[in-house]
Image (cartoon, rainbow, N blue to C red; front, side):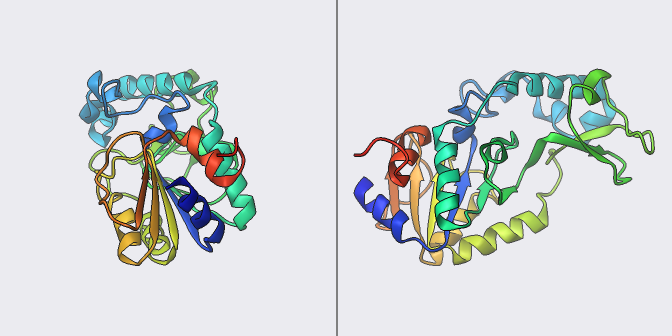
Length: 245
């Protein structure tokens, strides 16, 4: 199985990567779902919605400040580094991610499609056009306000009740339609419409290399290679950056 995956990586002309929360979890980031998920402690309706932000901006922004502080010192694991290596080998490696933590960019991936946005930046809630990187200086006072129009700032993640960024989603599906190999890493493939991306790749004839310690919604067939190991362990092996098999 692994030797076949290595050969597919070697021959691939247009590889594509699709990642979920499991990729971040290996680096120590807390996820939203699962046994230790943040939604077990906090209400998503209150803390990740436009209505919650408008009605309780101090509470919402205190939570996001906590999340940013908790992410300090979290670094990309060996799996991220292996993806950067493959990007250099292939010349380009688009990465579609459901994560908002920015670890792909921190690891050096340059073509990253963040379909749920990023918690590393913020913009004006009233849409005046102002945006900024989220720094300790910006978050010194909670909630932060737009210096241009005085409105509250919002984190640049997709909040409950908002549509996914259409340009990003459309490009993600276009990439899935033309890729010859897709890595599906650390995602349960349950959250739609993002979950449709790997199924689109399969429908167009691509082979999927799934890397996830647990069973997912992907089918069992000859075009899906499921490797039940962690990305930080297996990606360096597949790309020749780790110990030889």
